Length: 360
Image 1 (cartoon, rainbow, N blue to C red):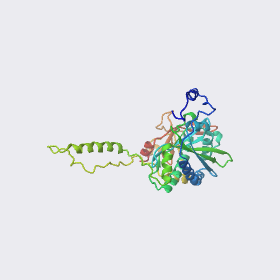
Image 2 (cartoon, rainbow, N blue to C red):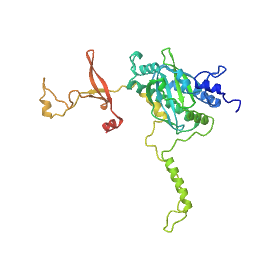
Image 3 (cartoon, rainbow, N blue to C red):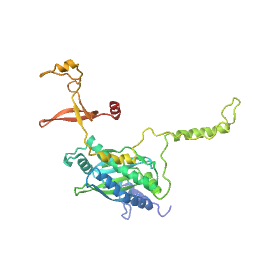
Image 4 (cartoon, rainbow, N blue to C red):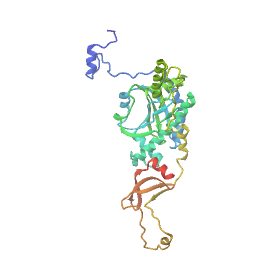
């Protein structure tokens, strides 16, 4: 047994949850290359101004400072997080495929949504609308990050999934399973308060980015048909040794230059430029209409209308009303009364497929 092996007393102490003999803590320090950490630190510090400018496009006077990059693990990071957090999951789908996310304290997420929706923070509810706004802010940050990575590494295949925000207890945050790099930013929304924003990279993502920044090759995105075609190539290679059959069957001379088929991505992701350009139209006004119902009438019926005429619509009592933006259906809702004014509570967002059908 080597000198570095644990004694039985040390093993017993670790199993019981106590400290090892001599007062040493049982926690295992996160592992990670100092060179990789320094490489990520330098890159993110160089791009933080671009991220800050992107955020300021939606929130006036918002700034990001830092970050401080370190290697950590689930237990250590969870201890730093508040009880409730908002996680913006934005995994990389190509270029450096793997886990990537932003984590915000719940109050910071509410503050961001309040600024973007022009609403007081105290009135913000963590509903679908708020999470959609937070996801859009995350999308802008990811777009700016991808632009910086592309310019620095020359890798033009970098893309991410569409970011989605979820509010949850810190214990259920979907952190990577192994030691991973995390960048901790200082976020100021222009209200004088400093909040923390964590950017988490999967271990393989962090290593791939660091390797590419140092001039090495980045891992390629997995091909949808690669695994199946690789198996087929192995089968064909085995058949080459079988020889020709009397009936002209497949032999060694019949199979040549078998190559994998590269299938196109059927669900393309927004480019970095598309992620950033959405901020240019955030302050554009659009006409929103709530439609109670419709009906068709003959011209003579319309001309015969007068005071007291009742018009029957194609909606049943209690059915949701339609919410249209620029005359296109986007949602459904129910009529409510706010003080002396009518209002509409959104009950359903129309799916993208239905919206595309409506536009056609």
